[in-house]
Length: 381
Ligand code: SF4
Image (cartoon, rainbow, N blue to C red):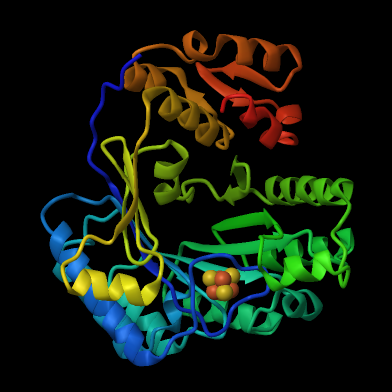
């Protein structure tokens, strides 16, 4: 089996690793830093833009974090100006997303985003209920989240995602339904729902270990997930990916590059890139990253050329996240064989158990498979 296509990245991720405060469940690469560190970080990011200039034409750009909207107005303006100046984004960029957290967006910041070609906002709401927000260690209230949504709408954003978390300790199905109701009542174009995970070395994981809190029963979490699907689809959202719901035409284009295991470039501390079959990652530590980039050192701390077999397996696993599944034609074009030729045994067993099926030349999870997706995917790795 051989990889045929050698594609340049069409998606760019820019990481802003700063937050007002660390949330209790967070294991993302983010820190609380002084404003002058952020300024130096932006110097480094600009340097990376300079390197990428004229090399690739990005169809989608995603600024995530951390909390990009923790940048003050002049820092945010500088970041957006330089993204445009170095050609990372232009009028032709199909999707330009910025992550925003409630209580960090001002009217002036919303206007800056709007005036700098940003056409999609993803708001980290997580919950509208104070008890859960407090447990998660979020800095905002439920009302802050609603206000931020309203402010961004007023600024002219017509493509807004709302991120929600379910499965919080002590959360009931009724609590979750209320969160879904409030979220959908805002009429966002896109909703993401993720189950809470207890990542190692987070305050929440320690509380769990010390029995200060207890996690929800798996069956309750499953019920919550099913409820999200029912709410989403009943309200006109297309459940197009395991955790994602969109109004027609508002499916996230950027994430689609990840789900299809296609090339992407990453800028910033800890950012991954996947270009021409090689996966690399930048230094994670913010200060080491800044110093390395500004001193023209190689800040790559991880590099692996994916063996063809691994790349094929990862493509199937990632694409199975999409409700549409993995396209046989795309797989053939990329790997020179059909999915079945490569994974005959796995697909045979999973089909017999009713967990995957073929539809329109796509291998996809059945509804039964959707609820045990992790187990199904493990079969391919
Ligand atoms: S806002 Fe997001 S990135 Fe920042 S600490 Fe909280 S979960 Fe982590």
